[in-house]
Length: 326
Ligand code: GRF
Image (cartoon, rainbow, N blue to C red; front, side, top):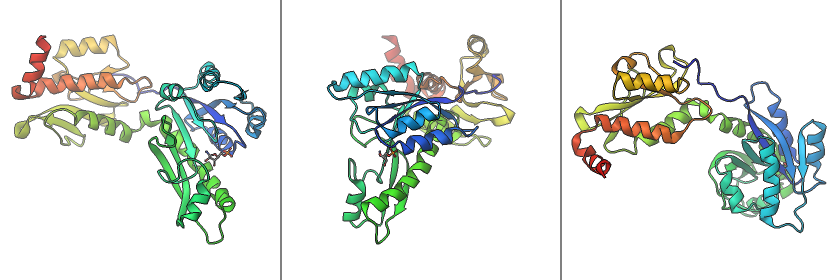
């Protein structure tokens, strides 16, 4: 079996700023801890005068500035993106970047671009968030880190911190405390997000939602591991989730193969991905390592489906068999 489900070293992050860059600084200093799973490889700005650029330079980080004035949005985005790509970044963290990005750019980075917004989303998208929270008489302001989608401040929220509003607060005083919360939240959320691929809870949730999409599936633990079966009362298992069970290193999905020959050839062709799991291996099951850098969820879907098909009753597989004949 594979020695370990190793992930690539540190995730490489590009940070986009337009102003003071205090969130960029918080991300940067957090990244200097040995166990931080990301590193900042470049800081970019649409404003060459942005204070944060000078700070990044002083800290030895590569920078790039390109004023957007007079440039088409798509051309400006493309020039920024070229630098991001050349720096080898896997993720983009927007930190006070005051430009709307083109849909094409956002779509290319979907799931790999985060933003920090000074409100408790979905409240107060856009600008003047503190003023709006005060005027509404809210008990709390706060901050959200979210994935960036083409709709402004509307992507999945990954983390939030509430900040109590005090009686004498003005937008400026509230902003100062929210900023403190921002500096705590962003590095933590970014670290969790880039390491989600080795987080058993995240991986289990992904496997579970995929397994449950198939017909007549119920989840039932087996020897302490989550498992999924199909076919009603006398149903049979088609998948198990193994979180370093039986002293194994991998977090893995166990599925059925057609037998020992297929199992052996899978392991031989890709020993980083496939292994023979303890106990189940003897009956032709194969382990698919999930906590590895280049995990292909389509491959996981494929194996889940195939394994389901092997154990599901005829009345459920009939349609699929018919489709396969075409
Ligand atoms: C922060 O309030 C952030 O939430 C918002 O823009 C501001 C950036 O501040 N998106 P800084 O440049 O990080 O100091």
